[in-house]
Image (cartoon, rainbow, N blue to C red):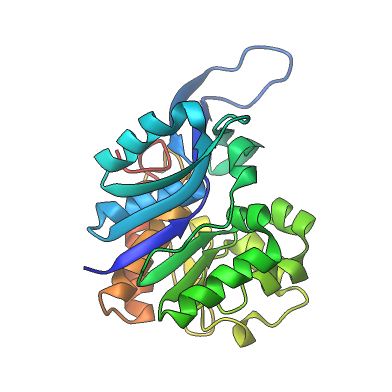
Length: 275
């Protein structure tokens, strides 16, 4: 069995699904649910659900470590959790209004992620949020170490606002050497504005929500028509299926089609992880 090591955030998702047009200074009917989340954690749980051996490296509050370890073990993810004595486990409020989402994020303990000792792995998956915590030099050192050991490298850029704060050039230098990157449409536009991404990364897979997905320079697939409930985690589900297919020997085009179908199922239920 192939093994994937994931470096990424663990977040408590508080998902607010609005039932009507938002009005200020008054009550807004909605459904609210608290679920496990975080881009790295979401990807890891989706990947483990596809029978890929998965280990998650993340940082959480010391008081939550035991319960989170038990949770990840229950969904067949091997937890490798750093503990923070001062900061809480991260939280995010996700406001879902139709196909649009607004995020209110407190990364908390995730901000203090320390450079880990890498386990042996077939593929190292880095959430872009972790790049912000580790910094350019430590991220690039991890990628170089993994590549020297023969592992593939995949990166999900994570967030346009965080990338802008970090600096696009710094971010691209940090993830130099990645084999596969998974930007969404907005992240791709930001990263490619002043850089030729196809000269930097062999496989660039752009997720575009209702517009489907694109393997840059190779193919585009249309989104499946489904009744969308919550798009939270759909990109993580897409990336998990794509990676699982590539590790099993599927071509990039085959993986694109399988991942597109898989992500369509993810939006038909609330939350960023499989139930």
